[in-house]
Length: 614
Ligand code: X8Z
Ligand code: ZN
Image 1 (cartoon, rainbow, N blue to C red):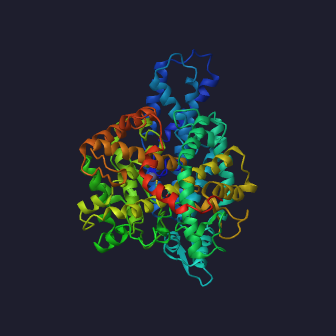
Image 2 (cartoon, rainbow, N blue to C red):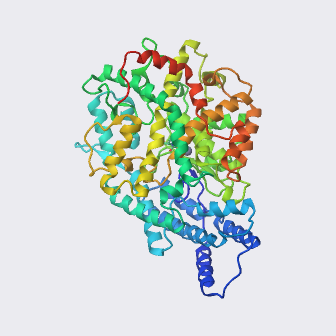
Image 3 (cartoon, rainbow, N blue to C red):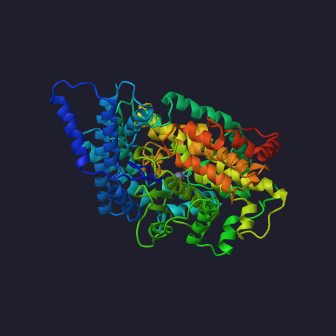
């Protein structure tokens, strides 16, 4: 979680009330004081120490308030979380503004420059330094979180379903009418968010502008140790590397869905209806594997969801198994408090935010995950994802406060996923979940199912923040919020809404990270980086077979190098961290392309004679 904090790899930071007051006082004092001499490096260092100390008086309050809101959504917990976040925002904005007085420092040490910059970037959602507007923005953000978390759809018969139940329909039902109803039903939750989001964008922009950024999107693009325009070009470069692979997957899937649902529902040369892809946002297509599997060979060797169920894995056993992977690499087990304080399953009696997240409430050892685990392959993979956040958080917990984060936000999202790439048949046999390794001939099915998850995700990972960047820059206006969203969905993903949409809808709000204030480009980066990490970890583990068969389970050598990267936190520019693990200083999509090479060749054969594109 974070939001104002970081939503997924939560690092709630609590602020002392004295903080903002002191910060504002010193600004006022400077204004009426006699001409002061230029600030010195020593003053900047003292200022930073104090700022870090204030900020790191951590989160006990903001973090706990956010945790309680997310695990027990009521009017009161929303008010309490908004108030805690208001205090956090007020302090962080005051400190960021105060940091401006060191902008013209002569010969500052690299570390001082880095920390001053990080201080200005410390908030995901900055508010203008105006008490009322800060309170308003915190309240809106908390309200949006509650609206998403408690959302549900009730049909005409009065039968209500939450996101988990509607998602199950999308994943398992094959009746286009039922799919459409669940798809549209979930999107009844978000129109009410639209006016709030419009105000949110205006206030967030004003906050970013006060800190010297053109708008909030430009501020988000400034978090990558490079010029923000270069970052935008960098993600486009990576997309260009992987787009041909996506296009051929899309082509095959559309053709097979047309066979299943008929040409009038799925049409050649046109986008695929978004309700048919097995997922509420068409971001992960693995649930429709059996509809697109190699003909006569639908068996990918095993079905992990069935295995988990058959072997009686409950939520805790699944998490303990995930933890076991990390400890096999040499990481310490999770603290006892993780097991006492995490939310592993959906409580029966109250609304919670089920969207999975990992938290580090005290920035030291109070690690937790919050999930609504079901015994499925998807959740087993998400557990590794979340634990990746927790092990990262603990690895860098000796860094100073402003460095308590990943090298860039894509790294945080990539670590657990890279580990999950090692959940191979060989590994599953090793831990007794699978009786014997499937024959080599099952590899194609395995890889196709992985592609339906990892490759299908890429354009979605890219477009969510293309939309938000456009909203924050003003290129997308409130009058075209929804139309612009669907233009991006169609252009990048090649999907279309199953029914006509209009500006009465607010479909971006039906995706957790939009009301939840979590930047999304991190997931696109992670989708690329995780394969880069996996390729290097496999080499360190001495596995020189095909990447999709490699598991680094039990390799202390791989674990040691991983820990070297993780423990750097945000103390160095991300290319240094990447180099520590991979020897490379650039994000590079060749690893994901290598991994899927066999299925890419197979897709070419399948698509022969088909018209691809939309
Ligand atoms: O939000 C998440 C994680 C929490 S950081 C479960 N993910 C994105 C999503 O669900 O949309 C992981 C993959 C992409
Ligand atoms: Zn995550």
